[in-house]
Image 1 (spheres, rainbow, N blue to C red):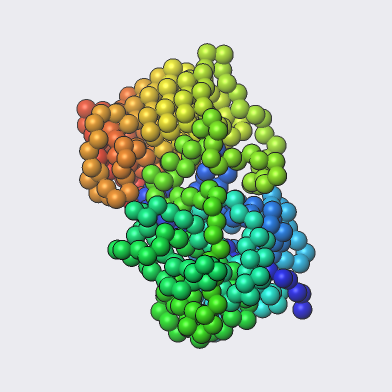
Image 2 (cartoon, rainbow, N blue to C red):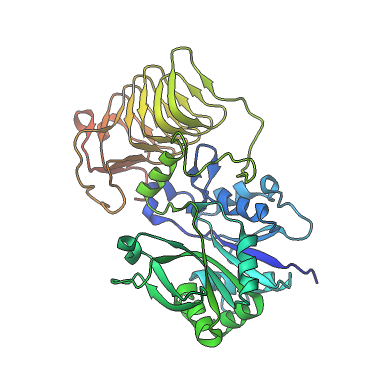
Length: 424
């Protein structure tokens, strides 16, 4: 039997419904980020930078894009004969066949995979956060405390603590209390959804709770470990960490990358972020174009003026177009003489000539104000926006649209226009 000190299990099956039309065709961890990356690149890069060479990636919702991106793990040096990266979708068994029904249920269904490496420790990760963390340092903390379970936590402003799962810890960092989104929190230490378990204890907890519906770490496994073993500790993390689970937080995290001195640096030599890449031409900026505070991917052509934006790979931006504070994803085509402001344009979308995105006053979105807000305008993947139309703020458009979809060539602020069976 192969022996590994610590393996990682990366939960990457979530739909990410709060990202709206961005996750119609892909799981949230596959969504592009920072011009040339995808969200899952960050935990995978953290693993290899931390010396973890065995990672199980648990997929479920719309896995094709994610599976294609991960491949056999070459970009992250995870194409190993022993270990490496393994995609773990749900599969049919003789009995108890089921989809993954909770975070811990997904891990439970892959006990045999974990046992095959006979690990001392198992690291549980989410595939939808942006951060850099040395998991080896967290493991050293876990060993020093002789912990059954170690939770990564980070301080948050006390006025925001009610939005998170909160832990209360004593001076030794031993956790004494858990509070799930408390109205009156007793602490500002928020759980990051990153756990290190001693393997025998994780296995015991999963088996003991296996009949729980929607088996979950926060609701079932960790409380069980707390009752049975007590020695659960909080590892405090004080660097950049961003949950990009909403459209606004996703847009905000991208915009933070283009600060003159960004809080989160994508290009540090000592902690590289790896991704799938191809030998392609660099970005071309036309002689009459202008860019200011912009990051771009490869093979992009910019012929207009772009300010404070994140532009993906293989994008074309036409002459006379002006783009402000926007995210333009891979393969998108932006026509001539357009004006885009606080726009999110998903992959392979086509924006016609003389189109204006993000105009007018803000109005609440008419279908999902909880998703489409903060003045953003969102264009779904492979959408087509015809020439000469204007789309207001807090709006969402997805699908192949024609001029008939835009009375007077205007879609007012707060509108939802979904065509061709797209999801909201």
